[in-house]
Figure: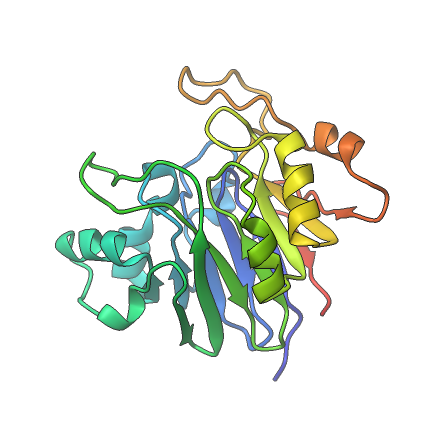
Length: 241
């Protein structure tokens, strides 16, 4: 039975999607970040995990979730190989690269370019950073830019995939800031945006988490025809097709 599609921001770049057919999908599941609610740190069900790159704050609890739930894990091929060396079962079909598209559990996943450093949580080689476009069973399409600056070829991503919603980092320092996100939306031609990779909590920042960008700054810069969706950590937003 078709269900409503929901998205839950779990802090940082971590998201939970509930698909139209009830699939539980996790994007970059770093569930130990300080903005992730305690109630969201031990999911009851995980059908699919999608990773954009190998930094610790994106790989997060992937291996623990896989060991507990045995979901399909989709990651860029070099990162997928690193995960397999950590114990993940080998499956070359779940390790595409930029430009590749696969379908898992009725969900279409396409990897795109991103401009960011790569690596793996242990400092080893985890390949290049990617973004991803996820098309759910009902046709709703979301572009998760991953960690990136704004770049001109976002216009091609908009042309090829025509995403209904763009999930863009806005924190700055490690990624684009709100000003960059405005330009990214212009290039993509997307009219709905969910910000990510910024600090929601009021507690002092750790020394390496310098993320000054905030949705209020983005909202002040956006043209009036762009809808900005800003969930609180743990808040579920319904996404109509």
